[in-house]
Length: 377
Image (cartoon, rainbow, N blue to C red; front, top):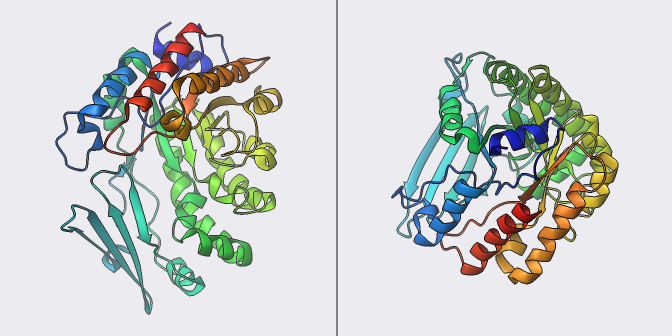
């Protein structure tokens, strides 16, 4: 089978010659020749792993799909963003929004040697900020999906894999307004207000999902945000309120156009697996093993594998720290538990990828071991 055929068979619950293997955030799009000082992948230590990713893994290349020709944003004149670099080479962005009598401020930082953006100050600090944000004028729905970059990505991948559409859910949009402590308190104590915010986010997200799913039918989607309402942050009852209620319509739209909706949720899953399945989704990632998670892959496969394609369950910290012989045991266990008994399908996949500029020799060896073992399986 080609790598694309292997992945599509797995998504459709059909037999494949072996389980697909994806390196998740390493998806064939990283460019070791891009001289941008913020591109960690141009360090020579990354090139063997990037070559291995492109040549040996079943690529699942993820990308968001923006809208073009959107109606004007009535809040645009209230928003300002300034970006600067400090003398240490870090990039800072400061966004301010005039919301009634309040000024909401968000600050982010990106360091040259770390492939992530840190939010060092969140937009909403308290309930009054949240209320002011809710009163901002809403942008009317509309616009056309800009699908050409996604199609070009798929063309570059060819038979080596598939494209995946990345999309945040309403909870992702709202929870990220706050630091985690403030978010959990407000989500617990201001539930009516929180639903107002989620409904507002849904009015923007659902028409976009409909337009993109119609323009790009039959694709795999990754829905990001449900983990904000997973234990220990919120109780399962609020997962049902804040995730199931708002994500189920997204899943239904994606499936209406022949797509495959996959829920992304780190951490503890056991108490919310029934609720995740009740969204109607067909996939789940990354199913982290204990102690990062609270459920074994074998349990998820046995109870939920007929509905869900399981993506996981290798922990990136194990890839970076475990001696290769011990790490190999983790890979063999994941392969065994992810494929035992009846199930829709399994994709061997880490929970994330390293994000430092210099990749260690141990990390490279462990990635090579993943490919070696899955090809023997």
